[in-house]
Image 1 (cartoon, rainbow, N blue to C red):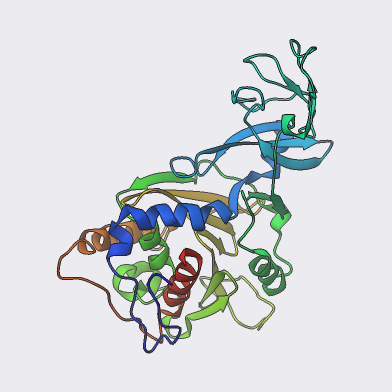
Image 2: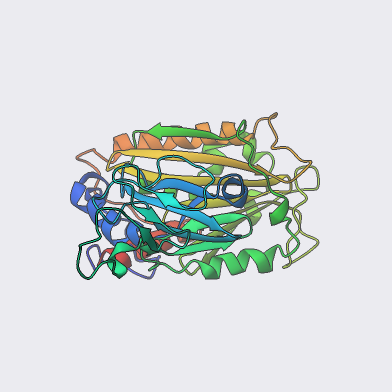
Amino acid sequence: MPFNINPEISKASTLPAEFYLDYKYFDLCLNNIFSGSWQLITDIKTIEKNNIYPFTFLPSAINEPLILINNQNQIKCFSNVCTHRAHLVADKPCNKNKLRCNYHGRIFNMDGSFNSMSGFEEAENFPTEKDNLSSVPSLIWGNFIFVSLTEEIDITPVLDDIEKRIPNYPLKDLYYNKKSSQWWEIDSHWALYCENFLEGFHVPFVHKGLSKEIYIGTYETILLDNAVLQIAKCDEKFGGLIGSENPNDKIYGLYYWIFPNIMFNFYSWGLSINIIEPISEKHTRVKFLSYPIKNKQQPSKGEATLLQVETEDQKAVLNVQKGIRSKFYKSGRYSPQYERGVHHFHLLLDSYLS
């Protein structure tokens, strides 16, 4: 393994600074991790409005043009690159019963198969399977559509855990609130943002408002396959999310991190999602998506609003990005009590980069 992170957290040291600074490791992450990752693309309501939905898989990093097709309520993903001369087949969402490339007119059926194209009447051994649009793995969970280029990273265990832990959560009643959603681009390595999310150790120091609303002493971290769950409990005033483990507990939030870059945060009012998209070794896109439950709203007042917590987190991450470049810093140690999630993340990175 490239960094040899000790599996015993009490003996282990964190990733060296060079991981965050050297482009070769950033490139390794793109090829060895993100290509095989599952990325949240959109929700079913989007593809119900337009049965053809083109998108780019991890723009600025992987940059793979793909397309979702809703073919009689069967949602599939395909390459959005024409098999003739590599022109994009679709450039915007639309409703059609066939796909037509606007470069030379090649037509595809809604299952991605080649339909017809003029000018090829004399071509021998044509068409073949190579003339169909390549199929791309997709996964539908609740109302959400995930896509992976190679599906090497299994996320079904964490999705199963969510369903078992909050079996009555109204996933189907979630709706996208554009007004409460926001995107940022920050001057930081993507992994530093994930590390910040993966521990509650910093909460009393960085999030003064949040510290007043949750029980720090009962903050819990659970390691899962390709995922980490953090549980914050509180009194009845601030919570109401009921889990299957102990119905008497008042849960402020269930914070799921899905390797490598997706956060699902479940609250009594709904779900907030963070997607951390790598742009370069020192630049990251942070997508914050708000999905309230029908007839509920994301809280917008108080000392611990999600926007306030997000602002505090980004400030901390940006300071780490500055410090990681110091000639006096090489690596640190993990807190065995509070940083098990970060250690788990580093072990996964080490495993997939080897």
